[in-house]
Every structure is written in C-alpha cells, then in structure tokens.
Length: 297
Ligand SMILES: Nc1nc2c(ncn2[C@@H]2O[C@H](COP(=O)(O)OP(=O)(O)O)[C@@H](O)[C@H]2O)c(=O)[nH]1
Ligand SMILES: [Mg+2]
Ligand SMILES: [Zn+2]
Image (cartoon, rainbow, N blue to C red; front, side, top):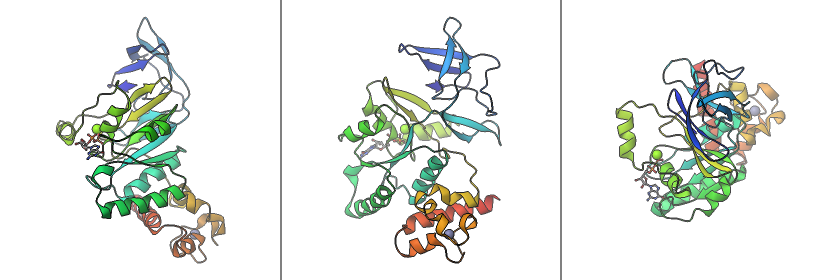
C-alpha cells in the first residue's frame, strides 16, 4: 500500500495492515530498479517476522526517475488497471499538451485511461466551452470523461469508473486529487490545499505513490507531487502508435512505418488533420512531443 524507503505497509487478505521489511535479497527477476517492492505489488509475507519474502509477477508497472540516483529508475506503481487524470480548466489550468502526454504515456504502458474534469462549480462560460470542446475530442477516442465538483458534488460516476479496479490518479498539484480521494472513502484522510504541498517541496521531502482501499476490490493510487509520472522511451517512429487515431491511419501513409507525419508526401495523418478528422490540438501535442524526442536524441 505504501513504502517509506525501507519499510512497507502491507494489506493482508484478511484486512490487516502490517508494517514489513523486505527480505535481504528480495528482487523480482528481470528488474534493475532501485526499489524492490512497489505500491500495488502482490507479495508473500512471513507474518511472524514481518518480512516480505516474495513478490508476484507484475501485470504491468510504471517507472519514474529515481529521486536518489540520477540515471536510475524507480517503480512508481505496479498492477494498475487504469489511470485517471484529474483535469481542471481553471485554478489551475491543465493544458492539452499535459493531458496528451499523460494519455500517450499510459497508452505506451497499455493502461486504459480516463479523464476527470474537476471544479465544475467555478467554470465561467469561456472555460466551460473549452472543456466541452476537449470532452468532444477525448470522448471520440473512447476515453471516459467525467465532470465533477470534488468538494461538494455527486461522485456516483467516479465510483462507477473505479469499481473493482486499481486506478492510478494523477494531475497537477491543486486540481483536487486529495479532495476527491477524501470523499471516496472515510478511510482516506489526505491533506488538502496548496500550502502543505509547498511545504513539502520546501522541505525537499520525497513523495511516493500511496494506495488506498475504497472497498475490498477497489483501490486508488495517489501520486502526490509527481510530475513526470511515467518514464518511457518512445522512439520518434513509435510515438504516433500511442495516438490511437494516428495508429489507425499509419498503413495508409505512403511511407508506412517510416512516416513521422510531418513533411512526408501522401501522409494519411496530415490529410486527416486537414479534413478535421484528427483534432489540431492532438496533432500539435504530437509535434511537440516529437520535437522533445528529437532534442533528447
Ligand atoms: N471550487 C472548488 N475547489 C476545489 C474543488 N476540488 C478541490 N478544490 C480546492 O482546490 C485546492 C486544492 O485541492 P487538493 O485536493 O489539495 O488538490 P491536489 O493538490 O490535487 O491534491 C483546495 O483548496 C481545494 O479545496 C472543486 O471541485 N471546486
Ligand atoms: Mg494532494
Ligand atoms: Zn504519415
């Protein structure tokens, strides 16, 4: 459920919460990450010794850069069924570039995505129009888009989205992640408001992911203060495969799998953008991510 460096909170099948350490050489085969056990892992424990003795194979996992060692990776969370991004149009404004980066990263990990548009209570007309335009784009991509007011509104749709799944919740600081989690279960009691997060940053506190139980089969993973939540190396050629609407057209490009959909002749993706079948905002995000990839190389 939670890791504090050398100790791990383990929730047992009978609902007990135990603080355990990891057995000396515990490491899942094929992993070289700095932390052996991650939030979301299924583990075997020696209850008397309060030791984690074995980690089960992971269905999937998300990496982030290690805070301690540069160039190393850290498993942020494992065994995730879906990832939901909390988005706000105002206070703070979430950019389409940020949304698309989140979606592309989840797509690269093969994790289904959802968008939760929060702070419906303070939208003015202009930001509501922008929000509806975004919801059109993302609903078209079969991504569930929920509209909520985390502090006071009805959260039935959120419960429905989360039911019987383990969901990683991400979003800019201040969008209302903690406010939302607190209302999903009386067991969750997270600090709300920017001040505590500013404080954390000032103290250089390392923040880890933490998993919370909503019911026996429903879990959420909060990722406080984590900006680069997924670490993936996607090559320029692979990037558009993580934009489902572009992936669907790739075989129609004259240069097929070599087409970057930028300057190439007879490009089905660029044609689709011109015809309004692919949104300009998604294509713009694509170009911007492609440029970053170029700079990285
Ligand atoms: N008006 C309004 N404020 C909200 C809503 N959800 C959260 N907030 C406020 O936004 C601020 C940041 O919320 P918090 O839950 O700490 O965001 P986090 O950083 O994503 O965990 C707090 O002052 C909350 O009271 C909402 O739906 N409407
Ligand atoms: Mg928070
Ligand atoms: Zn193309």
